[in-house]
Length: 550
Image (cartoon, rainbow, N blue to C red; front, side):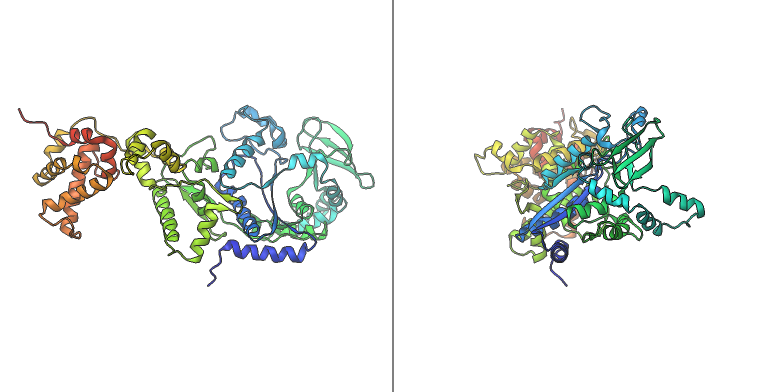
């Protein structure tokens, strides 16, 4: 079995492909692309992540790499965005780069999604060369390729028809073929794509068109302006040839028979005299978990939202550790706690030299790129501890640092400690305060619960007395942990160093439930030592001590 990661295996194939098909270029071009037609979610992020990891591996090998990321912002707006006024429908059919941001915050609707995504992935250590397709088309950069496609329009029609299931349609099919053009014009009057090319002069590159939306008719020369774009299935292979792409992945929809990639492979060869890049399929990434996850994006979770609770290294690890074809969900509920535990366990294992070669490789790619490390805490205190403290202190960072600092060396600078804990500290605070459902929060009782105390067994009440008698002498995370687990042993007259027995576990569990009931009216809650430290000795005593009988 190979000990290489999927990243190394794909990089090997891309290197070989580049050497065979682009031998005259020292630069290996790896491409990703997304349409900013809506919120760019975690599934979209896999496209960029996949290319980034392969490009980064090639850079680690000393290769010159150009990771280009195309923003397909010259695509038409197809529907009214979620949460936007119905009047925005007047922009349907216009390029998303050239319609207003419905919320008035950005220069265009496309800019809204591009800006948020680029800002997020920069935190992940991903900085490709971004290409805005609206600008590239408008500038005339692709005009020579457009002319090639227009000259081959009938051959392109036949190629596309070959992959369609319906029949040729007889005379109707012949008419469609004769009227087909691979280029769609945006009307120069209303900027919508409801246009029809009536005539194309191949010798001069002149296009005559009419618009069914506003009635405008015009003639223009491609050498003077380019108010339109190639249809997607032609646009993609055109750019493979134009950029000299050696690697570009795609989702399941692009990998199926008759898909864009299948058609593109033939068109780039037959029309543009080029070659399709090395291609791999990536699986879908979704979101799961019972959590207060909501935003203007509807049901889609965008990277910026995920980074509010997941450190950049953890985010990279989620995409890096699985085979590229594997689908997975990121759980933003209680699973976040287990996720951080697993992440810390991996880091500890590798630091101790007990990790496998594959584990060391995955961790190294998660915490850094060829250009340097991604943001990470220098003191990775348990996320469980931090989120519990955020819950019981109502997300007060000063109170949280007080509790954490109590278990540090004497004289610890809490301000410096805060910086050492970032970005995990802020992630834990946001998870506990913004994402945790109300019924999973810890609500501390306002006063002593007499009825609950009366319902306790004599043994549990004796245990509470033993606890209170030793409380201040053990006021630290380590001390309270020893005390809380030691009291049940004292109740059974057992030595403090004895290993847990079934009877001891039963007494311990009942004792802990008694404490939780008196403190937060629940059978469970944050770890008791953490909870005690957050509440301070006076509050703990007030909630656990029965008033003296008069």
